[in-house]
Length: 106
Image (cartoon, rainbow, N blue to C red; front, side, top):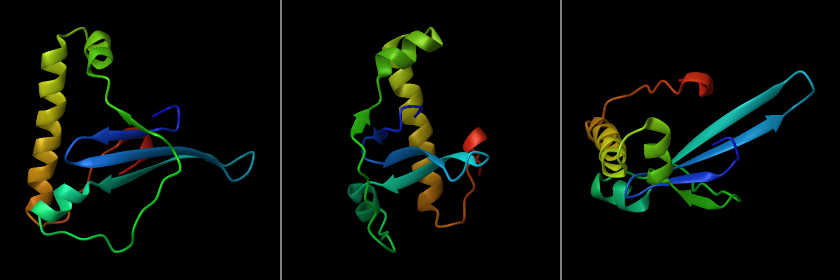
């Protein structure tokens, strides 16, 4: 995310990150989430407007995540998959949800 790249979470969403300097005093980092078409279709959802990105899409490097967390790659993959499965379940309930993204905001 620090490199302003797109992260693809298979069958769920893409996460876009971008640093924006509106002025010398106002340096912000923004995040944009875009649900994948198959997730939208399977949950009968639609976007209000199409979203575009000019940044390359990168896949989650589960080996690197596992290494930095000092766990096995399979465990890292399963943990990340479980997190996004839970988010998918919450979104499919049709209620308003709030996600705490720490430094990115809510």
